[in-house]
Amino acid sequence: MFRHSGTKYLAESLGGVPTIFIEGNPKKITRHSQRKDSPPTKEEVEKTIRGNRQLQKLMKQRGWPYLCVINHYAKKDELNAIAQRIREFLSAADGY
Image (cartoon, rainbow, N blue to C red):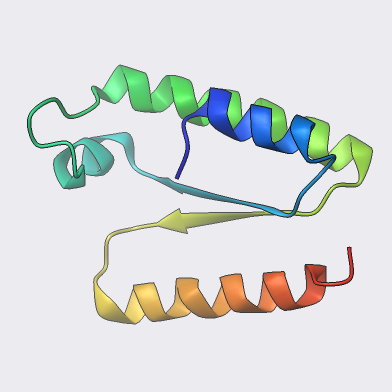
């Protein structure tokens, strides 16, 4: 998962590469962050989500393929469902 600036750069540089956005509740994201020494703040996460949603609007206008998945941190069953949605999206976007 990239921050908004990284995602924006990839989308623009690669001309609409199929992109997957994974979002979640900002409080849960900070709690589950891999950055234990300096986890993102709720405000930083919200800013990233707002930026990514603006990018999604642009991608939709340009007809570029993207998928937005919400992670509720509901453990294994949810992760399996997310993985399946991603597989289906990438399979459908394969010819893009």
